[in-house]
Length: 495
Image 1: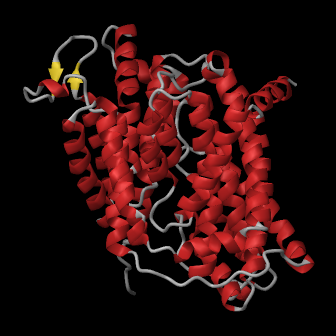
Image 2: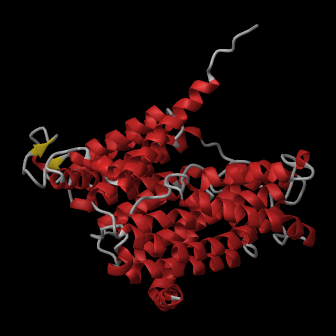
Image 3: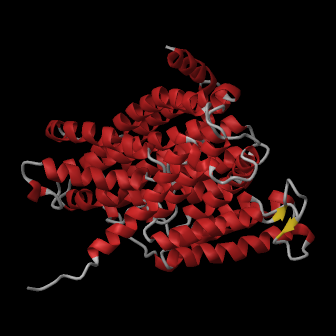
């Protein structure tokens, strides 16, 4: 198969010294970042964006992919040892994982999670390898109306799964408005510049990403985080009974997580929740869940790691992110001058296959690191967070200034950092804002191209079957949460 040949080409890329070091750096950073409550992969990638300006795109994407995978492993540490999930996707792992730790079985819980993550991550990457190229081939036949519908699906689904539908839509619209700032590329008219010359080129994606995810997350975490004492880990090797009980949950979690990850905006968090619910439903003794069931660790961990690979499928094949983290990776591709979408497999195939090969390597590295060195990583949790966050804020300011050597970007960083903190505190989703900013220019361009094709007739979006289907999916993504809310709050009629 062509995929196998391309994969060997990807391995020839990753096994050069530089790219292998970037992969190792990514997984180590992801491991540490995932173990810090509140500072997830989205914030980490946002912080690294300005530091990778001018770098080799393949190396940067390999590092980001390794960081994304490593953060899922790292989040398990705090979930099991502290009952404080380092990642949202590790929430369900904490339910049974921490109970196992209190029973003196923290090591087997972490070992089972590492093995489940390795199997699921590897199988998920195989799925990415075989699903993304044919999906991209189909999408090559899309015209501007179809791309308009596809972007609309990405924006609406990410807004719909962010908790509050209205807040998600508002955040996405704010991102689209920010994307309009500057000079209109077609008419030459200035938009939302308010007479400020430094706004003529628009607001850089990296500044907003670093502010909202970097500064905002740090401020929110400083406001909430307390210091903890971790449980000691002595032996991270699971028993035969643990492995036997975990085999089926790992298989189910892997399949479920990958399928959910492929859906735009679903991501690893939803996958882990669904996997835990599934395991509890099929268990012969569901009452064990919540009291230290090893299946309650294996299933969610498999799901959230296979969802990482699944989330890369729509990003590489369609240019639509499958999660908030891949939205930032999408922005990184644009920052490097690449246009995400189905033609990337032909125009930048070496990059994509290098990243796919690096995912296999990253999973092997993480397995090697996590089982023997679980105790060492656990000791990282005793570091005071007050020592970590000031340097992170300094890196944010340095990155914003280095982006354009302009103090205005530093002021923008502060302003949007406060906005990011307020969004976090008042439970406004941040990912739709960034996605609106990333996809805004493409959204506007495809809409204008479609209207030019139809000579100003908006019915072109409804006359083409694929674009009509995509628009209906986008409307359904908005309508379903509203219908669900109305059903839950329907007044009961007493007889």
